[in-house]
Structure formats: structure tokens, C-alpha cells
Amino acid sequence: MRIVVVGGGSWGSVFAALLAERGHEVSLACRDPEQARAIAETGRNPRYVPDCDLSGVRAVAQADAPTDAADLVCLAVPSRAFREIAEELPAGARLLGLAKGVDPGSGRRLSQVVGDRTVAVLSGPNHAEEIAQGLPAAAVIASEDEAFALELQHEIISTRFRVYVNGDLVGVELCAAAKNVMALAAGGVDGFGFGDNAKSAVITRGLAEMARLGEACGARAETFAGLAGMGDLMVTCFSRYSRNRRAGELMARGASPEEAQAEINMVVEGITTAPALRDLARRLGVELPITEAVCSVLAGRSATELVSGLMSRKPTDE
Image (cartoon, rainbow, N blue to C red):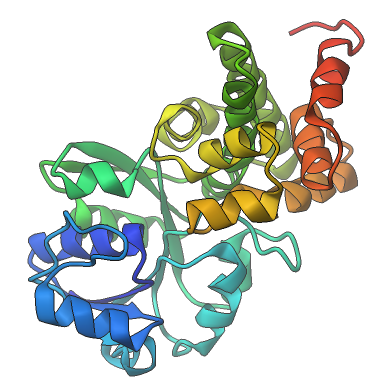
């Protein structure tokens, strides 16, 4: 296939390399022309993933990306840029979304802001740093077009990157967005030094929140126990590579959201996703106490007070 991967960050670069290993003709479209030039000259992306071999990938500036001739366009861009970039693509483009968030302007899932284009999303516990080292990983592809999802599964799967098909597009997208919010909370537990018991409780109750919201939106319950749900939630809450976990840790130690993101120097999706999911849940009448607490911290409230508030909530069934 002729494939364009838009987004020269860590995940876009690594995913482009995975596709090239499968024999596809891959162009990596970078927003910064200087970054594209550096990748083209060295076969590496020193800014994000220097371990990743990109010698089989053609790096180009985003303005020069051959999207008109592409069989597939993969969008590995922040959720806040997803809609704008998708709207600039040819009307008949087939899209694979690699972002994990929601449209911050509307709160809609990313597959809902691409117009009438054929779209699928890929999600799961896929930290780029490990995949760049050749370590095995697994993911799911979801689409309302089953034939498209099966085609992509066949074209992407390899002996080190196993791909499953999941027909629950709503659930997979909500898992991908919500797990970043829970990772902010889990990172807060790390920052306060509350220990493994507290962190396990936050993650477990966070998964319950994700499933409640998903059910209200029409998602399938089993999706939240799979790779897109539990799998991605665990890796995002525990991994040293997790930006969202690290941001939560920094904020618990006194950093503002802006300071935390500046220190990490990459997009922290949970910071923009949390308010959007909170507002969606309020419209649907779904209770998300951990998400509400994260939003309060992002708005400047004391995290210590919020921990006390979560622990003293009215007793209820699990």
C-alpha cells in the first residue's frame, strides 16, 4: 500500500517504521520541514525516537505529503489538531486514526469529525519507545466498516506487532481518551507517595468510570476489559514512558498543568481530554468522580483536598 503517516512524533515515526517493515511504501509527513530533512538525511528521528530505524521511510514536510495518491492516511497528531488536518485531506481519503483523545472544541470522538471519509482507529498498550526497540506489542483496530478493519489488520500485523479487530468503534475511542485522564490521577498517587494500594484502587475505579461512560454512549462492556481498555489503562498508569502519568506526578508535587507539560515537552492528551469527558458525562447524567477530581486539579484546586473528598464519598456498592 501507499501510506502517508501524518505526524513526526514518537508514535508516528515508529508506526511508519512498522509499516515499512511490512513492505509498504511509506511517507512520514512532519510539520517541521527541518525535522523531515534530518530524518531523510540520517534515517533517524533524533528529536523523539533516536532508536527507531526510519531508513525505509520517506520523510517529507507536511505540505508536500502525497495524500492525493495514498491508499491510506494515518493521523498520528494531537487530538486538538485532528479535525483540521482531516478536513484538509482529499474527500475520498481512507483514514486510520492513531490519536488518543477527543475533539476539544466539540467533545466529539475523533472518528466523528472526519466527515464522510472511511475511518478506522488503532489503539492499545503501544508505547512507541518499546516498539522502537523491537519489543513485542499488540493493538486493536476498530471501524464501522468491518471489511476496512480486516484489510488493515492484514496489512499491519506482524510477528512483533499483533493486531486484533474490534467492531466497537465507540468503546475503543472512549477507552483511548479516558485512560489518559486516569493516568493523570495515577500519576498523582505516585507524586503524593500514596503507595501501590491507592494506585491500584484508582486504576480499578477509573476503569469502572470508563465503562459507565462507555455504556451510556452505546459501547460494549467487553471492550473495557480488552487491549483498548484495561490493557492501555495499565500501561499508561504504570509505565515510565507515560506522559500522562508523569504529568500527574509533577502536578501532585506542585507543578501547574502548563509547567508539567513544558517539562515533559510533548503533548499530554489527558489535560485537554479531561474537561471534554467531564462535560460529556454531565450531559449524559453519568457520575465520574475521578475525572471530576482531575478537572478540579487542572483548574487550580488543591489535590490534597480532592483526595480527602474522594475517600469520604458516600459508601456504595462496587
